[in-house]
Length: 387
Ligand code: SF4
Image 1 (tube, rainbow, N blue to C red):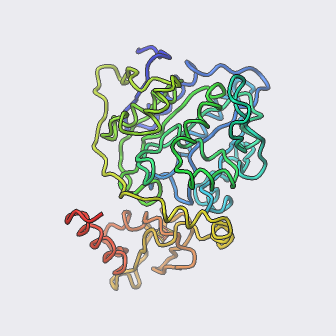
Image 2: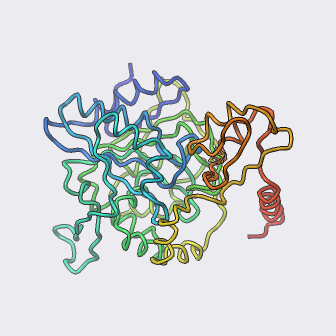
């Protein structure tokens, strides 16, 4: 059996859930040392009210297995995360199923945007350096385990372990990060949190390509990445999606600052298996204007209050043939109960995750005319080189 080495990034590829669990367990046993009564912050990616099957958020079983591992060592897991500043915390926890999981395992959940502490410059830094406000539950914990996601991003090209740390920031800091351009702040945030991170896992079971971090398409990669150097883990994640880590500004910057090794070797499990690589469709270029607009504090507060979620991401529509049909498979995947039986779609409950469209065997649920027109316009623009 292949040993786990802290100098390598470990990658596992299998569609078998028991094998995935066994890999995660061995990685945790190899890299995470915890003492009784220690508090460990779990930092998954729960950026939006979208279930993990969409490729946007971390799989529930990864949170569950990591929490179990900590409990067995009498440590206390605390789930510290917050969605993007425009999303409502409760809606995200309900739609992703995280609230139910945490309730069943008695795991405390903390919205990192609400109770925050100052993260000041480090000991030998300029004391006048920028101060970030970071979730108190993460800063006060004995360590952080990052449970990130393998996906593309419209501002930073990829979002993996380092970029995901933005989920620990207060609302004002998130707004400021977006206004300043994100990447240099992401590296600085990572530099200050690095000593607290015990391990980084990247969930590449269902990854996301295209217009991530929320509007892309799911890709079944059936892969997990694990390591103690977040920069190295992120770099291997880049290779798997067909990106060169040198081309990703925040990863290159972190490497140049000596915060990690973007050229670290990887070890694929089972031994002898090649690194799973699939060139991901890139996110459409984004000049950040939309983000600047929606991160205007009163507007983002209004979107949260209205639980606007990801409405408009996908518009499902019932085909005329759906009348009188019992859409069992489609209703089973709907995370909000927007589909009821016999065929009926409650558009007020629909968040536009698109899972019912993929699950509809007879295509009785399909993308709406508006959705199709938007997609065709985008495809035409891309084919004509219009940016
Ligand atoms: S109706 Fe379809 S698109 Fe809407 S929330 Fe349910 S599964 Fe998602």
